Image 1 (cartoon, rainbow, N blue to C red):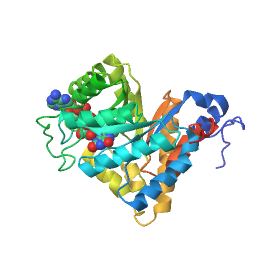
Image 2: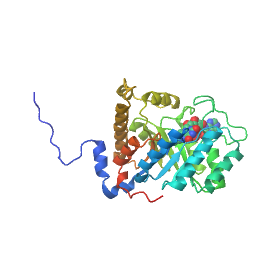
Image 3: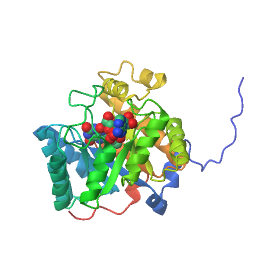
Image 4: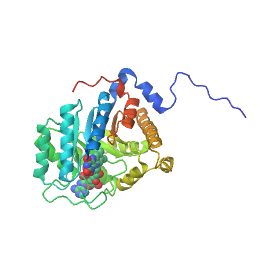
Length: 317
Ligand SMILES: Cc1cc2nc3c(=O)[nH]c(=O)nc-3n(C[C@H](O)[C@H](O)[C@H](O)COP(=O)(O)OP(=O)(O)OC[C@H]3O[C@@H](n4cnc5c(N)ncnc54)[C@H](O)[C@@H]3O)c2cc1C
């Protein structure tokens, strides 16, 4: 039988994404802070792709951008080069990721000093994983910084960097319980960290529950949700498993059969991440960190829903 639909105000935007975009039109976009994460490219082709993405994303004026760091000399060098180029050639405020892995304190201290000299003022300080891969047992370098809190302390002792650390809404796989997890975050804050970016997650409720635990522990630094914009579902599922991140069944089912259809995967990822972002925004979150994977399309769409295109144009490089 035909039923009447409930009445609604025709001028009200429909859905969380449209409501968020509408709420953030004009000056209110200034309350939102968005950052982009990139990884250092390995090949010339990847380098070109990264800088093409930067060209697209720079006019959105993120609050900061960050560049990840891997174990091994060449990866370290690539991070430094990418961060230094961003600092000198773009309007970005770049943060360099740094880990404790496979290096002495002296080696890490030299990297920290080089960033300071290059004008970089923000470090994302991490422990890192065993060079043999995520999940393998981690052993601190005998002459190095052992855990992220030691690294934060070491960095702050050298220069007055702004230091960001990691946080895990579903617990770090090596933390046996929540007390261990939250105590570790607290140690990093006590050592001088001023914000934490989270591991990615798929349900806003996971973020709320974590936020509650953080607040209950009296930790007051901003906890910034990290949003993974990975459209390659196979890779995403593999990474989620290694990192202890739960992928909902319905999310996995959406990507079923799309291995050879990158366009549909991109569209789905953009719509799912826009939805998650809008839901977080509607519940009061104002800081967002986008794992861009060096691509501009999905990150650009999420950033636009968050009102970033309303901000001032990029200043000349
Ligand atoms: C936002 C973000 C960015 C990242 N960027 C990078 C990157 O650029 N490069 C990279 O290689 N990896 C990166 N990672 C991954 C990260 O290096 C791994 O998740 C790693 O396993 C833990 O690093 P952490 O800084 O969180 O470690 P920590 O905060 O040091 O904690 C790791 C584990 O060790 C435990 N622990 C801490 N102190 C002690 C102690 N004294 N004794 C015993 N156990 C202890 C903690 O409880 C926790 O379970 C990133 C992760 C996130 C969330």
